[in-house]
Image 1 (cartoon, rainbow, N blue to C red):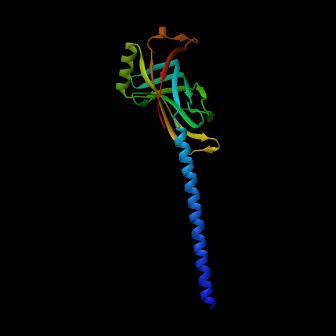
Image 2 (cartoon, helix red, strand yellow):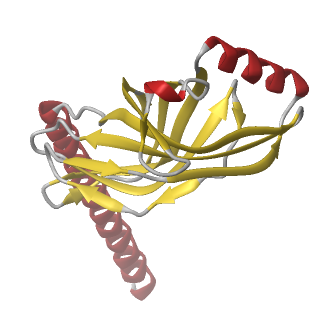
Image 3 (cartoon, helix red, strand yellow):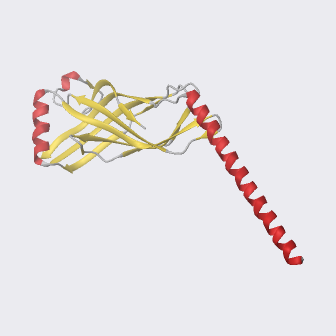
Length: 209
């Protein structure tokens, strides 16, 4: 008789455990569904970026296969969401030429951008005697003779979205800013120092999240 009672208690425990697990799963599904509905109603949009200007300090082919460049760029980031904030956990900024990175990445400090907020960053980008393919050096010379060099200023990092007290997981963000900079034409810029020339660009950037 005692053996049957023990088995009966075990069955009750199993049933109770299954009910608890089912209740937890239903609760999780409800929470996720609520978050999904709120997300669909808010319709979050990715931030927009504008490359405002670039200040040239050095841009020189030190040999046919080495490039030295030092300049500062000003980038504006705007959050157009009415009820969603953005955490920029990590952003690395660097310059490329024909898909080849020509400067070291410069990290932008982590920051929070409130709804309808705007941030402006002015990182320095530097590359000292960066090895490049010989044909790249030839193309740079040709573009400088034509009046401008086409660089791409890139930002790669991670962002999180905030809705009220809810904060999402991290998402990768990639920003590409086309920059036609007249390095070979100093008269199109403004001298802001002995060897520094600022070029106004006001160029929209492509953003993917």
